[in-house]
Length: 323
Image 1 (tube, rainbow, N blue to C red):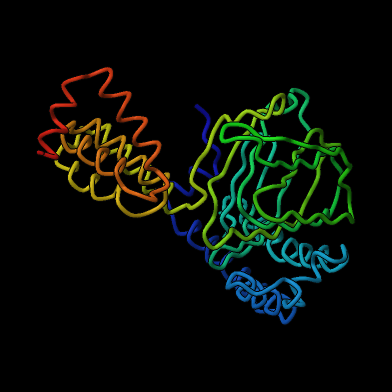
Image 2: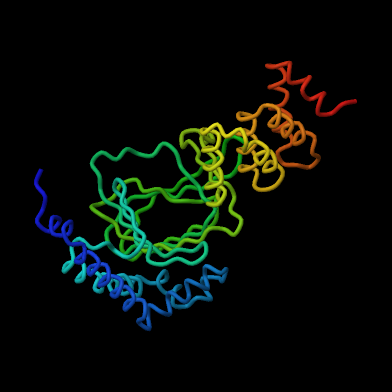
């Protein structure tokens, strides 16, 4: 196996790597301290704290005209690229990811707001989407370079399990601005002409509604997830406890069915039932009898289905609620 001399040198002496990161962090700090960028980042803090974008003049300007947005992005490029050229194995000192044909660099964030650079690349094998996802957030985008064919998609609820979708195709190209508000609208990238670079400002709702995914052909709901990242992390933790068979966690899971978001409470109930039938069924029975609870009807339906399939559970309920 061939090991590049630069990599071999870093393995034997890590000091150059530390020097590279020090230089990149210094460059980032200098960029953040410029008068223009300091004002923009201060506005991002205000926006993340709940201010209207129109009350954040420096930030709003980035999404009103392409000129200020390109100057902002170019200042970051001109600061970091020379340092990366000198230290090619250094890491960009921002959160970043690259997956498939999309790359994101998060320039700054405060609370639920984030300012990012997004790159879309052309692919020869990209298939048209069959589903569409909606999240409870506001997004403002400015195309800095390139173009892409997109579609704007909106939805209204038709029932609890499907939606009425409407879409409009459009071309998003350099100088174009796009704003999307809330959970009922989004955009989809259909085809990129070479590449497209976008400056994006996003802000999640203070108490976000669950994210939803619908099938484009008929509007059927195919997936729903908590819109709150904290709930998502807690749901993963609950699933892990279930996979580990942590029976001792059942009482805690039963308590979690009382308060919190519906998605998290339902996940706690499912895992509790799987870990300890008695604790889980007791929590299910209590939930089904709770007036005004948004999960009461679903809990009653699940309870009925379980008792029908497993009559012994009816005797268990009698022990919980003796006459």
